[in-house]
Length: 299
Image (cartoon, rainbow, N blue to C red):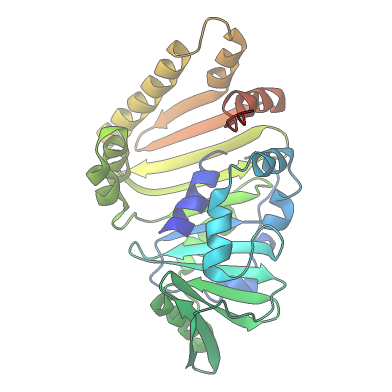
């Protein structure tokens, strides 16, 4: 689930008005998406790498998940990957990638052959290089499902892929969902604020979001709830969180109020939409304020 949560956590940050378009979804990767997928996220790494925000977060070592992903899969999104799709059926995640790959089995990994494809794996996960430009990573069972999907020649997860194609904006990151699987239960078990997110996910039947990080954070997250009352409860909760955020701004940092001014919550019948527009200068300041300082060396 880690790869999926990484994709979602970036997607929730942030849309614009230019057409997203079917051409923006790599057809080779789309053919690998298993038919039982309920959560689908895309990251255009070649575009994300050129954004100032990504460069700053990387320099501040805030993307440790990429280190873990590179170690577990033997390919590095920071340099090997141009585009990724993360697909989940609610229980397991498979990451599909396009870029430039070389077969280099990590030490201690086992090797198996499935329908002519070599799968390299160890206790933490597995991956397969389908060709020099296509790779798949995740639990071995999920990798096999992606291979089955491609070789079947049949379209899979067509509804999710169609919704992804209909998204608006030149986003570097996006997601669509038609359910959440075990994620609400996992969050509820954590207690505290995370349990509140578990309740929120249970009330949302389907959702989508995009993030454009080229200049600050511009984006949208939309969710369709089961009932209009669920939507009202969710919208009120989101507005309450924004209000609490404003109250938490220190008196000596009044400019940070602009952060919450750029977050708008709208409800229309059973739908809730969160619009985010945070300028680049404010994002820079936020990153500086939250930067983890290395402890000073003793003399």
